[in-house]
Length: 246
Ligand SMILES: [Zn+2]
Ligand SMILES: [Zn+2]
View 1 (tube, rainbow, N blue to C red):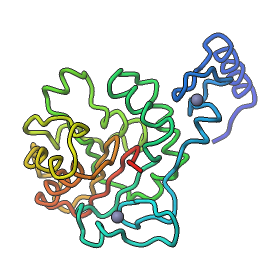
View 2 (cartoon, rainbow, N blue to C red):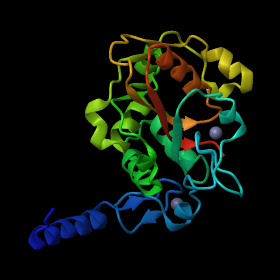
View 3 (tube, protein in one colour):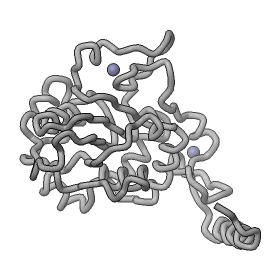
């Protein structure tokens, strides 16, 4: 693409004026920033980010402290059932605050920063081009209370090129569940058993699916969704979560 010098000068003047009159603040610690360009994070908060990196599990992306890439114990047993999962940043430093601002305060301004972290992480480069992008759904009662599904917003913001392939209505949560954060280990799985269903399954057979969620914690949510998609005949299932618990 050719950038006209006049246009780039005008846009940088506009950006300068915006930064002067509408100062931006760090989404991690609230400190004022010199620029409004995402990611809206100060140098200290940026330094606290841990991007997905090698060595890691070649299937689920779990980072290892040392050694080389290989399958982790869970993936050797095919615990999750997906073909591959990747994330942008670990759930540490400023990331929990970013996720919570979106989820509980509805601050959609964090999405541009999430998209920028996804680009910086190179996570999308590791994914196969999908036929369908499915955000992990909320139960209609929670969706009504919250007003939006954060996984759908993340999918739209982080994968703009695949926006037309997002189907937010195909995979549904068929019964309400208690928030996973209030549970641990086995009770998380029990809480989610049979919680997901497909409204139709005509588009899934032999399809390449990308499932999107905000945080990968124990993987129970993803595992339940993957089982439903496999039963419907999906050929390849990959997962992207903005973040992953360390
Ligand atoms: Zn900061
Ligand atoms: Zn793994």
